[in-house]
Image 1 (spheres, rainbow, N blue to C red):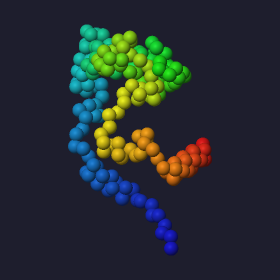
Image 2 (cartoon, rainbow, N blue to C red):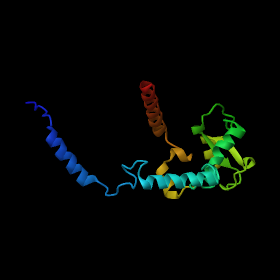
Image 3 (tube, one colour):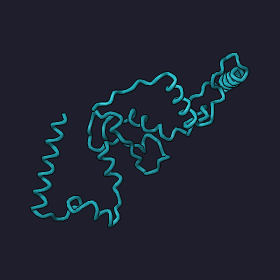
Image 4 (tube, one colour):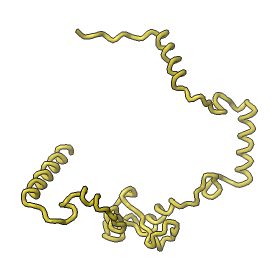
Length: 172
């Protein structure tokens, strides 16, 4: 037996909305909620903002109160200067998401263009090798550490790799 969905009445919807408001209201209402330009507080805040802009100019770069010194802006500058290609392996036509910027002297605050290298993710990972503990090495497994593996294990790995590649082809 299939149950029919009942439509909610408007009264029921209103009651539910009141219950949700009571349960999930954060309790803090923004100071300017529902206010218009005719309100004195809004006019005063707008006046202060306009005075600051007139005195200091626009809020761009160093003049913005949220300015953090431009530490993360070096990445785009380096890619624009050196070009969107890996400087290590020469891989070209990479988009900005696949490019990393490496500091040659390992100092993240030294952001001169001569100190920055544009690298693909693979080359960048080679520049920063991971130092693994013994337990982590044990967890990684025998095959990835370069230790000898049995023929039986190699066969299992090749079968698993083939299955994986077939699944990838089916998804495309």
